[in-house]
Image 1 (cartoon, rainbow, N blue to C red):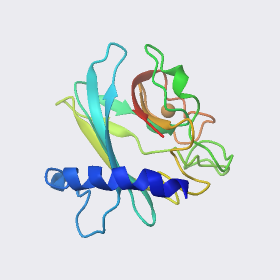
Image 2: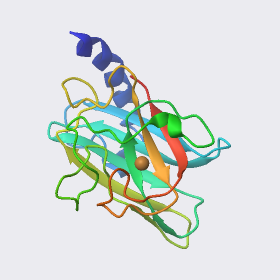
Image 3: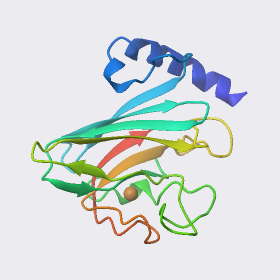
Length: 181
Ligand SMILES: [Cu+2]
């Protein structure tokens, strides 16, 4: 029952975005779905990128873009709490991990549902990923990212090694986006 109240405004949001998000492939060839676009902000509120999340039947798809970064490899994850308090963003808590696994797609005891592939940033200072986490939902069910305390998308200073629990040795948190409940 609770999901019904949440889905309606999201459908309106998805409709608004369909006119200008074709490059993200967010709504093409699909029934209306839950889409959310959020901004990744640094410790001083500077824009570091955007993330568009789309709930699909198979799972949750993310299309994330970053900009204004030094060339390198940057970890990005879903974290458990929808609170981005600068400058450390520790407020976002650990990775979203409803199945109580260890971290990393290369960890035999992993991965977290919040684990995502690294973003590679080239000389332009920009980078992007698209990725779907199977079984992850925005709302509804035990694996819903948007539980009572929401969730966050967090960008890290370094690469995720995909195996070191609990955070892939990915370094400090350099940008954060709140996903409200
Ligand atoms: Cu993280």
